[in-house]
Image 1 (tube, rainbow, N blue to C red):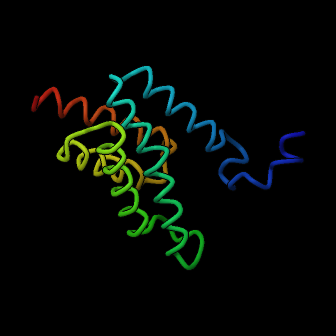
Image 2: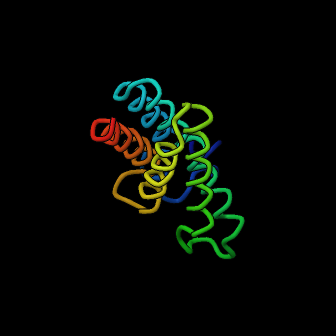
Image 3: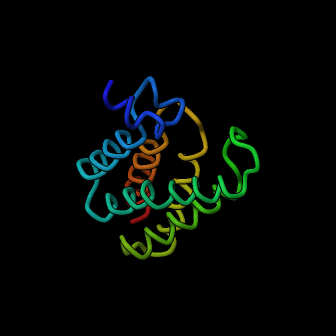
Length: 136
């Protein structure tokens, strides 16, 4: 009640009756840290923190009316930010970094059933892990 009274305006409509985006973010970062090797976890975390944020910022800046869904510009921003973060922060080679960006976009696009923070972390982490198992 106190949270809703003081901070409820900060929540999105779908967060009012469920977990907040911040809670999903913490769960996604924790899952990445526990499930994946260090460099893959870093890339997955960066895709969530940087890629998803870039998609939201660019998507909202480009979209004229709220509620229109995910924009192509937001997806491009998610791809670029996730790929550059995988390359620059996790030190992935460019082919893996580009794959991380593609996986982040694919996971970010749907609206449900899971929150996109968790979907992105799991998609990037599992996808790169499978890539390495098959091609390393």
